[in-house]
Length: 222
Image (cartoon, rainbow, N blue to C red; front, side):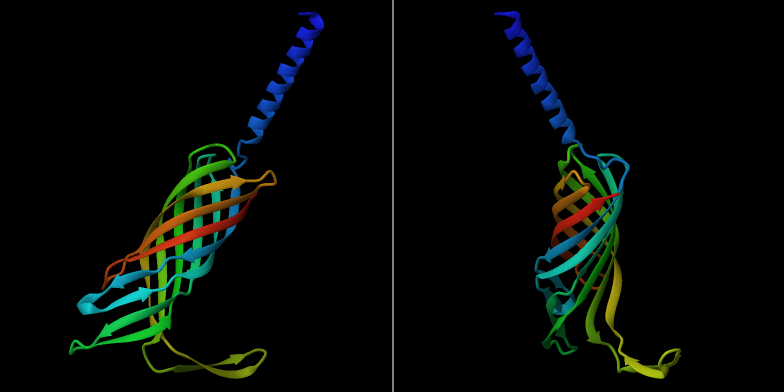
């Protein structure tokens, strides 16, 4: 083999090795030490809650929204705050003192605030991840628990104003979650996440609420 051929082969191998090295380096994440935020589209699954003496709630599936704000301690560990909001329809079964049931169909508000620890399995831009977190959940049945109340005040633009409001049955409870999914980062610091989250809401007078929610997130690192 001539010296020219050896030189040519050596140059090609060197170029391929350099290209492979650059390609591999390009696959590594840039999230280390960066803040990030995301907007999420949610799809919750239907679920049921068993209460006392035959009472209960059947909650329909729903589409909602949410957002996150977090900080990447390193390529593997992300700490974030997550907020989500859903308004599913439900069918509640009430039981009176005589044991007779009656149903109410309505729409409820479910808002969750969670503080999560996220673990990325790989340091590449594409990686699977798992998550665990705790926080609180606000549930509002939107069923009135008393007659309307009125309130009046002096407004700097509208003068003396009166309005009415009505209290509803609602509660804020401790909740926790686990999730698993995948993440992909673009070169411009944008990223996408897809995951399934299971959350449990600690209710005092019934079984815990068990919510399964699919998340599709669009975010940015900064």
